[in-house]
Length: 215
Image (cartoon, rainbow, N blue to C red; front, side, top):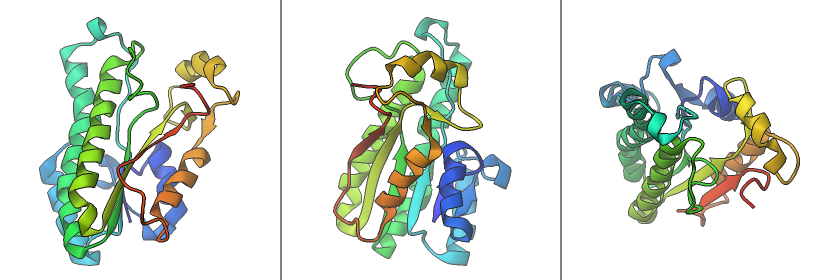
């Protein structure tokens, strides 16, 4: 399997569940997910060595807690590159080979609440980019379903890991119905379920993992 962004945070935890079966693409491994040329070179090497991966999990995505009018043009561009561009380029680099192989699973990452139809004032550009990821995932799911490739999106809420924004999480904790901040295990279990061979009839779905934050 292939984890894009698997050197830290949730991506690292997912890759760890699969051990040596997981290939990690990140800047730490020499792959820039926002650069289509870097991704194309990495994909060429991966296909030559292993063929098309049976699963692609994309977890890349910078976060910035900034009001819309306080967001600089540079920050806006960076958030779109990290969250949206990297998703688009990774899909184009890898999914055609999965389609050709006639099988595969794709799991993308959005953020809890992006489909609620309400203002996301805390981090509007981040949430807008993640809403676009949901649309990419659903559109791709429809496009490749008959080729045997399933595409789903996971939308985490407050998940604590080494790279998470813990001050923000503590501030929002009183709104989490289950009364705690999530752990990476709360997310990895869902991803593993989506990648199970027996789970071959679920595609185009958005799965929210937020302990009831959006209720």
